[in-house]
Each structure stands twice: as structure tokens, then as C-alpha cells.
Image 1 (cartoon, rainbow, N blue to C red):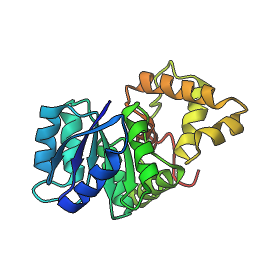
Image 2 (image 1 turned 120 degrees about the vertical axis):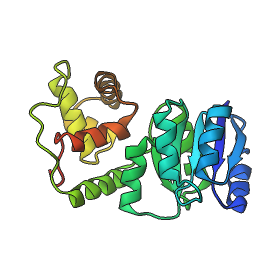
Image 3 (image 1 turned 60 degrees about the vertical axis):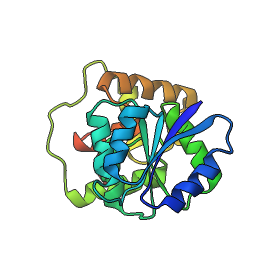
Image 4 (image 1 turned 90 degrees about the horizontal axis):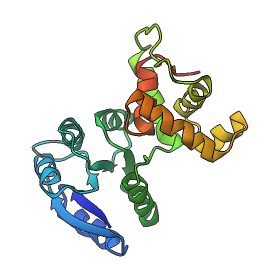
Length: 218
């Protein structure tokens, strides 16, 4: 059973999301919050698997609430859901520790699939969102120079996979580029996550840009 906390300052939207999610036999909406402060508190108390988080809310916005959940070491995965497709929101949400970023006009099937993916430990980062992330880094200017940010046990093939991931390539496209299977791509990603001490592919992309491993336009 996937336990879900709904966080949105509009009660009617929470009702709508709940009606959609509770059509799934493996979903249980265990709580609701109307602001970021309540979201952090309920995440600690209820221990949901997934927090469906709005961005613009009173008291504490969804980005800061996500950051607090991550900083407190709570195991819940955060899926940010917003009306506003703004590059800066994408970057800030993912940098704060979110496992994915969706617009509220996502079809019900897409939302359901995203929640299942995040609960399973994957991330919801489509190539289009990756390109938004790249645009955000472009606006910030070049990253600081780092001599060699890679741990010594990261292989050359793993570096190739990460470079393509940061360029917005999907697992299928990476597999085709490197003439390997999609399963092998996923195995490389799992090993890199462990070696870098990161949670998911979203954090890998952020790490790659912040450490100069990937650069906009390359």
C-alpha cells in the first residue's frame, strides 16, 4: 500500500486529487495539509510514502517545506505538483530534495504512474524537465571549477551514462547511444547513486551541473 499525504492550500483541489487517487487499490490518502508548516508536521507524524506537494502556499511554501522534510531526514518522497511551469521552480524544487515535478494539468493516469514511480524509489524527471533544469543552470552562469569531483571508483562508462542523463536523454536514448540495454543503463545509475551518496537521478543531474561535470550547451 502506498501511503500519500496531500498538500495544497485549495481544499477543492485536495478533494479532487483524493477522488482520483483512491480509485487505486494500492493507494491510501492518509492525511491532508493546507500549508507548508502543516505538511512538514504531518510528514513527521504520519510517515507517508509520498507527499504530493503544492508550491504556492501560506506560512511556508512547498519548496521550503520540501527542503525541511529532506533536512530532517524523513523518508517520505516528495512529488511537487504546481500550476506554474517556471524554470526556477523546477530547479528549486529538485535542489530542495523533491523526487519529481509535475504540472497540475497532468492526466490522472500520469499522476498515478508518477506516484508509483516515486514510491518505488525512482524519480519523475522527463527529458523536458531536464531541459528546464539545464536552462536554469544556464541563467546562473558557469559553475565553479572543480579539479576532479568524481569518486575514484566511478567507471568511465558510468560517467558516460551520467553525461547523457544530464543532457536530457532518457534511459532508452542512453541505451541506444552507448549500444547497451536499458537494464544496463539502470544498473549503472544505481551504482552511481550509491557511489555519490545521492537519492535519485534528479539529484545526479543537479550534482553534475553544480560540479561542472555537465555544462549547458554540451
